[in-house]
Amino acid sequence: MAKMVWDQLGGRFYEAGVDHGVLYLTDNSGVPWNGLTAVDEKLSDDSKPYYLDGVKYLDAEILGDFSVTLKAVMYPDEFEQFDGVGVFGNGLYVHDQRSKCFGLSYRTRIGNDVTGVDLGYKIHILYNLTAVSDTKGHASHSATPALSTFSWTLIGKPESTPGYRPTMYVVLDSTEMHPALLAKLEAVLYGNDNPELTNLLINPSAEVNATDGGWAGSNANIQRITTDAYSGVACWAVTTVAAGNSSLRNFSGRFTVIPGLNYTASAYFKPAFTSPIRAVRVYLDWYNSSGVRISTTSGQSMEIANEWVRATISGVAPVGAVSVQIINEIVSSVPNEIHYIDAIMATQKLEVSLYHDGDTLGAIWTGIPHISTSLRSNKPILPSFQKLLKFIEFRITDNGDGTWTIVCPDDLVVMLDSTTFQISDVNATYLDTNTYEIPT
Image (tube, rainbow, N blue to C red; front, side, top):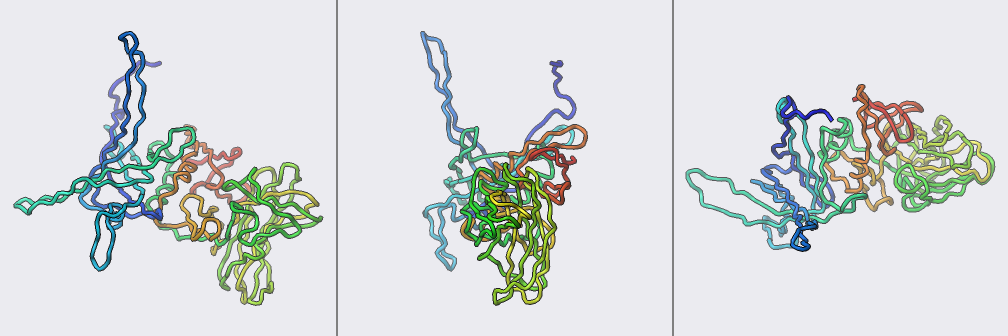
């Protein structure tokens, strides 16, 4: 190795400050924590020495628990429920109540001797927290009044972390993430100005069973399988019955539309290993109040190979339409051919959007998971621990030539056409399965 050099210009790093505190409530929505002054992190690990013939031969590590001491001059009103305070009503609060679990995030700055604290930052995210309040002191006013301070010890329940010890605490380093990916996560944690978007379909990725949401086959038998999936852990296997077009459609799951408004539907298709390449398409059947189909908006057919391919269709609800049926069709298939369909989406919007359901990052179910529509919210949301792990499974390599290679889950990629992709609104070049190149 080359000879070490100390204190090179730009090589003196440090961490400072705490800001951007966010309290996440029981429904995972977030509110700003103004008045946060300090966060002291502590891991109660220990060791036990062992001796043989008077000589130490082993220091056995005793794994402890992680805790945080949080200090503030004020806290959000919403925090009182987590501090054992109940709202009786009409300005009366009752103390010594059972507290609830919550989430928390805060930011610390990274600096060096060249850029100061503007070099970067770390976002600290904590899950499943319970607060234990320290002593609260109140003192008489004096000539130099001092602010009351509050302090809590936060403990939490760790979550399973594949390949690692369970934890309740993760940190994101802005200096090691591509800016576009960091921006996507911050838009979830802190909220954003994008319009909210609802996936109007129920059970859009067969996570429950094959028929919830009104899904049924036309000239096809359908079943839920877990051996392949584009999003989540399951998809539909659509087996053609007779020669001709076969489809998966929401027969009894048509949703309400408003004439004159734009709607867009999409679905991902993939042939089973033994099936030949076919053309696929998505189209819209519009129905009136009597349940009679009044018109169809047909999508353009596109061929699918051995990978998941997205087909889309946009249309304007015609006069007299009150509902629409989404048809996901395989063209000119033969008996017993099998094709997979997954991640179906329908939105009241003209443009195609990144697929979402309540299990994807930044989205929530509007009711019972998978048995309700799903909303991609613009409000601050704490993603579930498992959603966050899926997001940070991105493997990012700086190619050193102004581009990055990214290996990522497909449900964070928008396919604009057969050759153009986007990851977090940044144009990407397809390299290989789940592998894309984007500019720095």
